[in-house]
Length: 212
Image 1: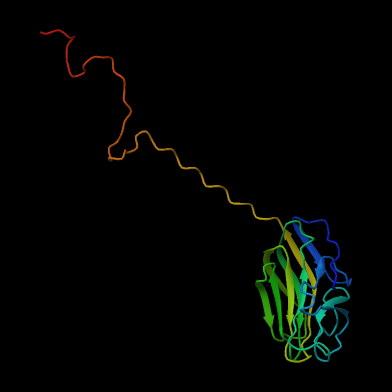
Image 2 (image 1 turned 180 degrees about the vertical axis):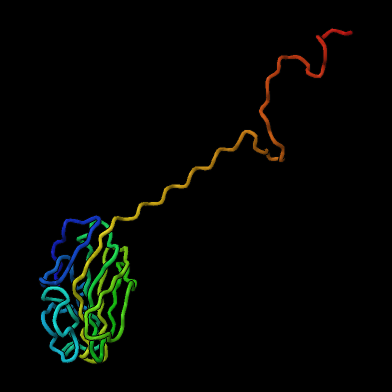
């Protein structure tokens, strides 16, 4: 799983499924080559005793796992990233099966495209596959396996479903403020009213303009 294969035509809204039946799964790779170990593509049980899936994959025949036996030095992380190439816009969530069993199981982490931890689980669970769902809203994500204190700590992942979603719509612009009213207060605090043109007569005089 060290090479990224050309991606699918992007899906805006829908689910992409990966059961790792091929060792070259579309869009998957080790995103930090040289600084962490690749996950191992495998079928059946793992070589180490009392760790790893006892009956093989959660779906199909193959799965991926962190092989913690020698010559792998303890303390080295295992990274496997999905580049989001199958989604036209964003990854809304990821759903996957995981197996964490053994005397020295470490931690399984899901990091979003910014490197933030979106989900994690530490320590042995039991000798069964379990299902997890993680909300992301990201362009990509990475599985990180952090080994424990010995080789009895294989962590396996299988049957990954990536939910593609459209990017959120931008917020609507705020409405423009209303123009000031013609009856608005002026700077002195007095209400201003428009002037009205008269007919030239003095409205304070009564009569028809003659002295009586």
